[in-house]
Structures are given as structure tokens and as C-alpha cells.
Image (cartoon, rainbow, N blue to C red; front, side, top):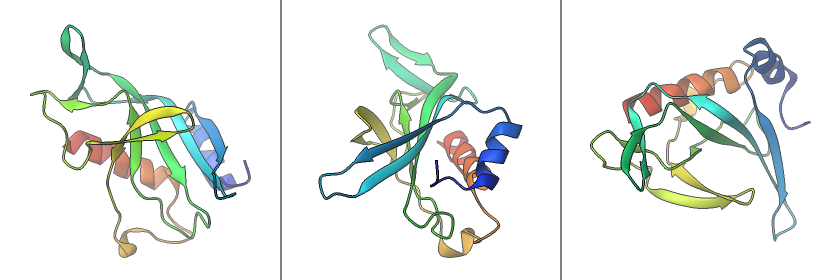
Length: 139
């Protein structure tokens, strides 16, 4: 897990968050790294489509890709499974794409921090998860 700084691992352990570290080989020879939170709690404002209609989705799997150079390189965008919709059945803004990552289809949430929103040596997974939580609530 060398791509996740010890400060982040300490935070995850303190909060007792369940997580899985993922790595996959890319066709160009590089590796893709990510961290999956398999039981990420939602506030109840998002739904998932089932054959019987939309149902409340209290948790989802959340994937955050960890770029080369993290934590001096900011985190960017995130992914969820299952695919999430608003209570009225519409898609959240800029969350309609999907991508195959680590052998599974993920809903892509296009969210981008401004350069001044990422403070090197200060921000990490703790602050980024706060950002993700706010974005999911706003969805």
C-alpha cells in the first residue's frame, strides 16, 4: 500500500472505515491505483434503479483513484456502484458516465477541485471524503 500515505491509513483506521486497496496493470505498462470504500454511507437522498423501480440506497461502494504523485497531486473525481439517481429518477449532474475499473462498471462523478482547494501537506483522504460527502448530498 505504498501509494497511500501513512497519515491517510491512520485516519482510516481511527474512523474504522472499511476499505480495499486496488491496483491493476494498464495496457501501456503503467498501474492504476485506487481505494474502494465498500459500505460508504449515503444520506438517503440518492436512489438506485431496480426492476421494481427506484429504491432508497443507504450505502454504496465508493472508488477514489489515487494518482501518481499523490498527496502532492490532488485527488480528482470519484466513482460509485450501484449507479445512483436522484429521488425524482433523474441523473445527478455530471454523473452519467460509466467506466470499467478493476473489473467492474462504475458510475463516474466528474468533480474537480480547483488548484487552491488542495493544500499539499494538509489535505488527504480525510478532507477529500468530506468533499465527496458534500457532493453526494448536493446531488
